Length: 243
Image (cartoon, rainbow, N blue to C red; front, side, top):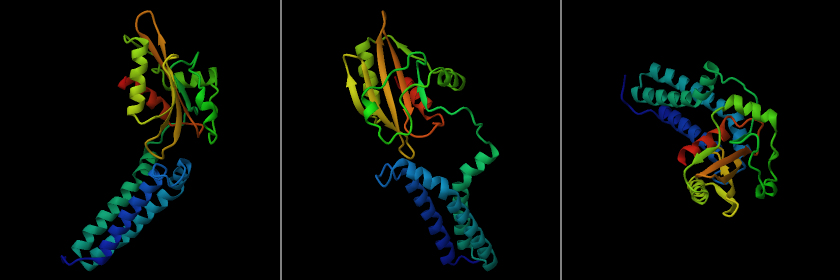
């Protein structure tokens, strides 16, 4: 095989890199202010696989052509482009091999299912939301207990005031938008965004003073979608671990 350069190989590699940039833009476009999160999510659902299949297909043809023509440089570039296309298809391939069991849909997670923390300020700041902040009662509580049995209030040795300040600091460190904070009532409300697509979720944190120490309760609710795919539960558990 020859070591001459390959315009076709370069073209294939450029196409695969462009595909990656397009898909990344779809995923993070909302964070760049290009569109609403649901728009980027829709783009991914409709166009990611066709783009990936296109890259795999055209790079496979290019690979065969480079083998026939004996161009080693082009062969390497075509193989790299094919690998990028397969990487883009990896989530789909994985979901086919190891499908995620479909459980009951839930988008409202709380540390206290009997007396969940209530939202006040955020009730009037979520006009675009497709979900309600009214808790779903025993039905939702049963689903949560089945899916996330370990989520519970966090008891700490800190005073209530110290626990409140620490919780507020953690929320700010995580980049949450603090909508309302009440040091007297030991509670605050915030808007958290998912790392991918930047979907908005509503969060409320409440501290309760105990005879010794304090207790932290929180609740996280998605604005869009019947199922949150575990995002709200993961947010609460991550917050507790940081605390």
